[in-house]
Figure (cartoon, one colour):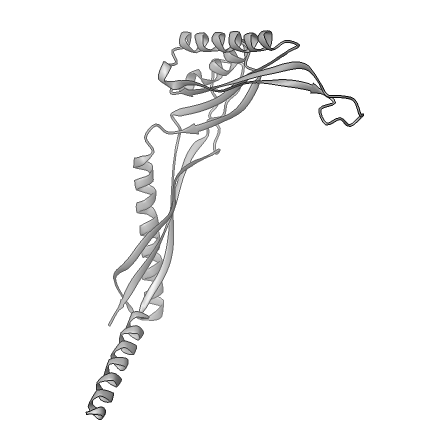
Length: 230
């Protein structure tokens, strides 16, 4: 009886070892895909900063400038859904704030600031928009980012290219090794989504601020494991 149990256990271990060895008959590869297209949207982040000896005038000056900017954006045809104000702040300005000279710190004024985020869907207006909002009081420019309104088709195409790239690599490896490529065992995606990358310049007209919209690049990568057929 003990001999039979030992033989069964031995067979189980051997079978497990063979299954594990069989699992090693596979090819692991990675692939990447990139899609580029001209952008059709731009996100502008700008701000207004004002300083005065008193808090109320500083806040009022910032508010007046932001009001002018919002009105100007409306005149330029920017939809209200594409404009957002954010991070309104009012802070004191200190003299000798850290007491370096031994004197007591004093408030010498106030700084008020507010940010305006604008989504420009007509890139032909982009230079003009920047020119006008600066003239209306925007004195803090925090960035310009190009994008596409619907990135999903680009992401899908980049993903398909990544899978095709990985599959091509697996086929080359299998051919070089003299084996036959089998079915896909697993596949996983890494990264994805579009991060704007500046490429060939397309200058925006209609304003004194030159803009190079370039192209939006969407990149993704995948890892794939293929079986090796007997």
